[in-house]
Structure formats: structure tokens, C-alpha cells
Length: 123
Image (cartoon, rainbow, N blue to C red):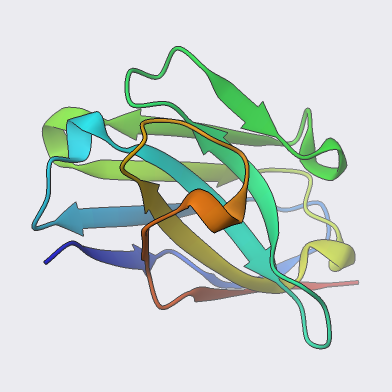
């Protein structure tokens, strides 16, 4: 069974930085597309960033372009989301997800999901 575990969430002041990590086990990580999604209370879960199995394709939501960076280390079965210049509107639960198809920006195509990590940005 594929399992994904997020870590690195927490409380940070506006303008600060956090790095989220997602450790994968139980599957062929190097063939999975990986994505980060977030969900604020009362809102739908939306994509934040995604990266293909090779790292050759990346996607960012317009709201985070220039501030967030997704990366992966296939040797460590880990995907990262470096978040900088954080804003209060970035506050959400952040979810890591894996796509057996290898890449994609639609949450409906993702096959495996972590439990989420809370990120709170204070003003």
C-alpha cells in the first residue's frame, strides 16, 4: 500500500518561510507524479503545485508562483514544497498526493493522499 506522510507544517508570520516534506513508501515513487494541494475551511481543495515523475514538468497555481517551489528527491522517496513570502491567505491544510500516471494538475487524477499538514500564517 502506498503511504504518504507530510511534515514541516506549523505557524509562521507573514513574510516568513516553511518547507513541507512528504515521505512516500510502499510504491514506485520514481514513476509517480507528485502534487501539493491545500484546503482552507469552507473551501474546496485546490492544487498548489505539481511535479512529474522525472521532475521535467512542474506546475504552480497562479497564487503561489514566484513564492513556492516544488522539488523531489527520488532517491529519498520524498517531495518538498518550499514556501516563501508567506501570506495569511496561504493558511490551509496542505496535502501531498501521488499520481500513478506520472504527471498532472487535476486533483481527480491523483491516486494516493496523505493526511495533511496544517500551515498557519499570521498577519
